[in-house]
Structure formats: structure tokens, C-alpha cells
Length: 166
Image (cartoon, rainbow, N blue to C red; front, side, top):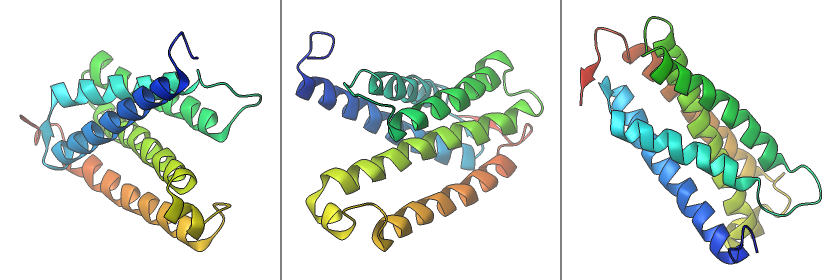
């Protein structure tokens, strides 16, 4: 039981929140690439991504897990993204800071999803049982490279004068 909720149910809720965060993050990414502010989607992405990290800490564990370290990093970059978006209203350099930090947060969610997929999906686990095998490394490096390119393009395209309301 976690907070009075059966562990399986809590895990399901955590996964749903994570998937909503990832989906809404991609919607925000494609909006930014199209120079569109998607305020509702952005709020959903921020809330669910923060919730993903926070709910991850409630799982019982005897030591600090890599996913918890990723959660701390995610919360730090999300704080910067929230300040850039809501506190500084994307003014000046805060616009690029928002894009970069929001996309790092999305990448970290996807990174953890890939790790979990290789841990839980039997066919993936068989290909990379220790997560040091080439299929796992190719997946992670490929996704990281894609995010680096998309983040650079998004930071360039999401300029002050180019942004259109959605």
C-alpha cells in the first residue's frame, strides 16, 4: 500500500500520469516547432511531468534509485521552465531557457520510459537484460540525439516575433 492505495493501483496511476506527461510534452514540442504557444497543453505537460517525478518517490525502496536521481534533475529543470514560462513570461532569453529546460524534462521522461520498457517488456528485456547491451544503448543514444536536434531547432524557431497564439 502507498498512501492507502494498493501498490498496483498506485503504479498504474503513476504510469498514466507519466504517459500523459510524455504525450502532452510532444504536443508542446510540436507546437514550439511550429512557433505556436499551446498554453493549455503546456500547463498539462508541466503539471503531469512534475507529478510524475513527485509520485515516483513514494515507491518503497531501500536505497536511492537512478530514477529518483533523474526525478531530482527533472524537477530542477521543470522549475526553470515554469519560471521562464509563468514567472518571466518567455521574455528575452527566458524564451530559449524555457524551450531547452522543457525539452530536457520531456527527454528525461522518455529516458525513464525506455528504461522501464527494457525492464518490463519481455522481448526488450531479452535483448538487453542488463541494459548494457547494444539494443538498449542504441535506443537511448538515438533518442538523445533526436532530442538534441529537436531542441536546437525548437529553440531557434520559437523566437519572440515568430510566436503565434494557437
